[in-house]
Length: 79
Image (cartoon, rainbow, N blue to C red):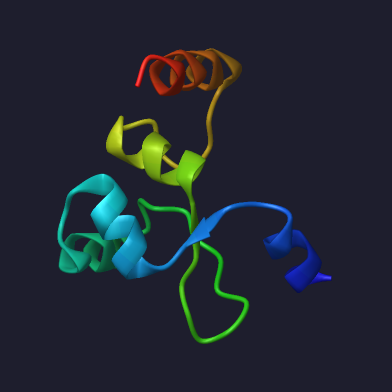
């Protein structure tokens, strides 16, 4: 079930997430440890959805309000 869910969406490793966010892998690791970055760990590897990374970098946190979701969509579309 988890693998089906993972296959239906685009997921990034720590290395890929760091490249996407233009930060170091250590920065991603610190965000994981501090609890500020949402992730999945179905195996031994951390996986991140791009929306979660965008939310983190814009400072919205792990749970988005409807207003934040709309704002994030607008920001993503303008990229």
